[in-house]
Length: 135
Image 1 (cartoon, one colour):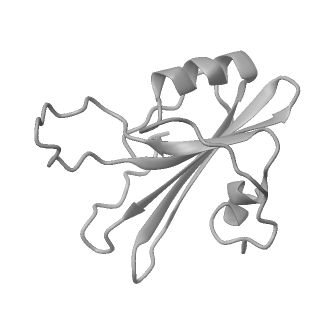
Image 2: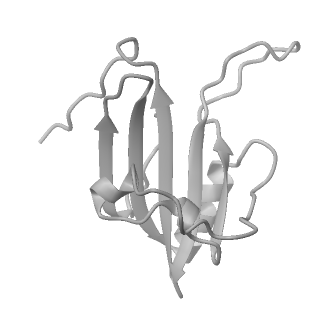
């Protein structure tokens, strides 16, 4: 996904789901509210942070449920989201570079805690599988 996880992150979890149309990579972790603000400034969205107009409780649990978490689309309060494109932007005056972006949600779920949800999609069979973490 080419996005970092802060050393202070807690409850970090990741998953990679192989599918026929596209593969899905998931990452989630929690930070204090202050740490989350620093992290989100370091990883700004394309455009601006969006807030949902309404929660979508009818969202089928499909991705983050495998990590024991509700889908980020099911929250309205304390939620913001956007497409984040990690790494250095390529100097392309014509806008033809294909910078890789991820979907990022930040949910302020407790008075001083924020959960970061990250979802990314990959071409099946073309994208290399992520390396297993080293012990």
